[in-house]
Length: 291
Image (cartoon, rainbow, N blue to C red):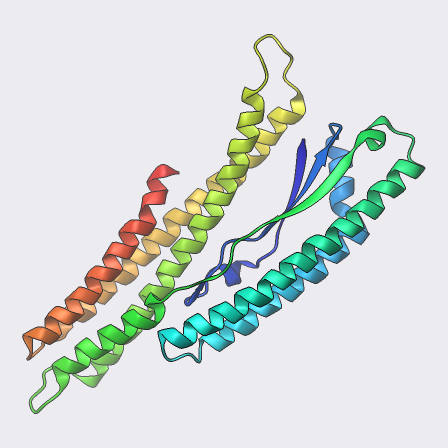
């Protein structure tokens, strides 16, 4: 079996601060006969198939962009959850339409090849469409943590003779928002790495199925080599995003140190919010070691 894959979501839609999205993968599985690279490319470049994919891809990315604008206006977790539910309902409809329409275009193309091309491959080949995806997840911390930090810091500046300036307060709130965005970037990079890892693993597993003494098809070797380069790039991307988050965390801690809290409870509340962010980074970074 050979697979042609397409990525649906644009990179910027995998880095939203308040909505976590996994990359949506469209796969065309070719079964019944082993295609050569030129035939695979012919299927990928077929205008009727590609035009359908691009049109549905645009609709999905437009939906994400519109939803992202809605998330910029939410004020609490409940509003975020409501918006996420509505988004996932529309996304499900778009995915179903994408799979149905693309399969129709693929079937038409394959039948045309069977009729017009006198070739053993097309006589045996079948091409099926599947979409690998998951619903969007609301990142509650993107709303909760900045609010908690702002509340904690504000508690430290109330009353006469407060030590923490308004400028310092604004700096801290901006820093925590930047850090939440950095965590989202890490998550997006890790999802890309996991997706690519699965493709590489599938190609390697195909090689492992070949029994000792049997010839190794060059196409299966090529499949592994094709996946190695992108996987390395994805892994490097995770590393870069983790380092960027570490720099922003360092800046956040510096901003925290600049504040002088009159109330011990306010200091402890701010430190607790910092601990939550650090723990999130640790959780998100575990996958790097696995990669």
